[in-house]
Length: 106
Image (cartoon, rainbow, N blue to C red):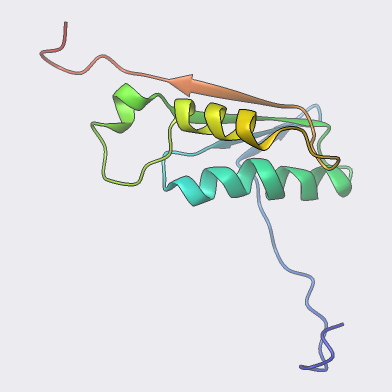
């Protein structure tokens, strides 16, 4: 219940894929969405007993450099999680970085 609005809001969330209680998100967008997926959304789906763990697929820095500005990337997420440390709401999440050989690259 939201007292100020005198209304109830249940919200809506979706995840790219769930199989065998593993949630998968593919994020080639802005950094804030990658953090939200791992730090909030997967925790919500876990609390609702939909997933036990997750996989977040993001570009590696070398691929993100070929994309628009502000795109999230593996190395950034790895560093941020190391600095943040473990939280009591965390669930196991594999962060998977992908890359692609660009034309004219060595």
